[in-house]
Image (cartoon, rainbow, N blue to C red; front, side, top):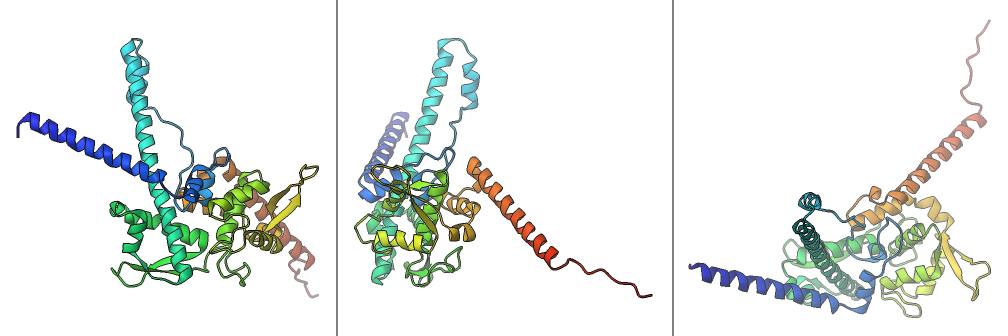
Length: 338
């Protein structure tokens, strides 16, 4: 094929690729308002994850410092204008590349959020969950990305709602959701609740932890809103929102107290006594790490605090054991007979 025709084909293919990316970004902007809020709002937690990492249905990595390429580092040593121009171009290319990757992941995250809401509705109505219907929700053009989107949705359904997705029959492309009661805290929570509230509890405990162990009522509603739970509007899964919070307080998983000298009067939330007894800060970090696909140590300052708590718990346990041993008289001494 002549060189000119090859160039035209490459240019045409490049334009087609750019149009596909542009359309994908437009689809992301057209997502529902609840999904938009879930992926855009962030909580200032230093090295911690954004609020969407707590409430979203998909992995969101912690903040990663911008990197500089080796070639850019060498070019910085040059004193001529061409060297500085080269550095600038490399930085711009790196930023553009990171931005594109972030946009693609953000798009998949939103599609997974849409899929979660769809599956919860199907679960509530006891209706079949078919792949063909799911593709209609996320759009058929994402057929190739469907396995990744479904995996993200499955992680959220398990961690947040305590529901495991299973295929009805191998290669049937038909799925069902099964209540999972084996994870941390689910068995200890009130069995009268039809849906495991642990999924809501853990993000709330996470926000309190990342808000220096005390969160405002606005923080609590911000997280609940990310789940589509709004004050005065009954949620399809969790029911009446204020009753949900009241139950968590009544069960002593949350503590609600009046803010001194606040005008107008306001309240704030802390971990309750049962949360301190049944959940650790390390467990919260592990929960967030499962959502983010990272490890607890990826959140350094909070990881150090969690380690200190683990050490204090171990010391308290050791002291209790030592006290019990001393009260029982310790090891009896052998007596010699004369």
